[in-house]
Image 1 (spheres, rainbow, N blue to C red):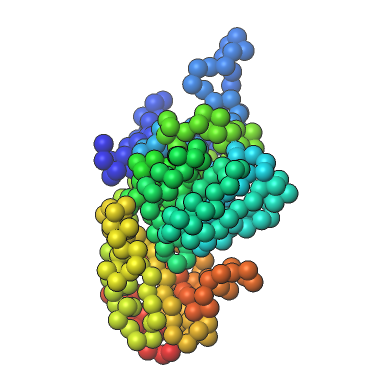
Image 2: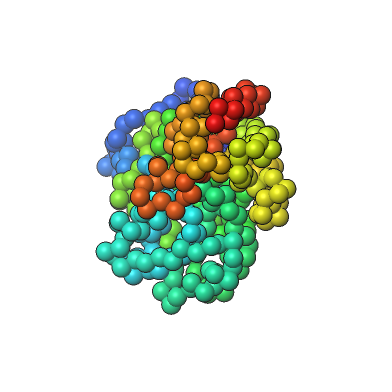
Length: 378
Ligand SMILES: *Cc1c(COP(=O)(O)O)cnc(C)c1O
């Protein structure tokens, strides 16, 4: 079945006792055993280990990414952590140099005393990745488009390099989502999502997920699952239910994000106060060719802009916008803008004048009008 159908029907087994079409939220932490003290086939035992809402959600997520298994977590960060945990001590991982800030910070703050090290490289250059590989390299982590510069990594090229050296490939697919890119089809071992973003789509659920297929090493998959059920970094039944519900409209929302982003990028590119627009859908973008190769249905809803006049002008622009809110996060129905440098703090590598935009699904004319009036004041 196609994505639109899977988004609605995958994992929805309704509720057989009442005939409810939409599954209820099961809050119970514990489940009764059979008459002889036996564990009843297909029945849960304890909610940390498993819960019906979580199981339904995982079935839907696996279907949307084209995987066989999904493992969900309390946040995107917990999902990433499950992968680093699975690698074990003294691992070396290769990351993109403009990776989501929290991923790099996680290694520095939580895994340094495990002996975990990383190399941050420009992943648009395969030679740099090759040069960074060491004897103890266990994982190459891709993020494409990257945050916040929207650089594109050629997934197939990285997979080819990694497979030859028996290195796992993980891909943070939060930005592209399976609507635009399906990393498992390119041979990636592990897909990670902050489902807080486009999957949730309404800025009201914090959660994460790992999706794999049958090619994954069974030990690694077992450790990721165990990190969830024994480590306990699980999403609540309510969050699972709400995310399950939000996913039904995911394929309807995504094309609007992409169409709006394309129109806004084109508008902003022509504006004299803007130094540069980073959006892979623009023909002028240096990553447009790679984007066309591995993105389908459009180029996503994320972009960043460089404003003439440095940090001061950039912050002035955010304060002049009326409809568009200055706030972190992305992937919601509402348009958000953010000055990444001040969000990321003193170790930020983002340019002073960079603003990241998560383009929502409002009417594009209203968004353009808001940007026009704000740009005219700076
Ligand atoms: C938000 C985000 C994360 C972290 O996810 P949380 O749900 O906030 O823990 C990881 N990667 C990317 C690309 C993100 O945008």
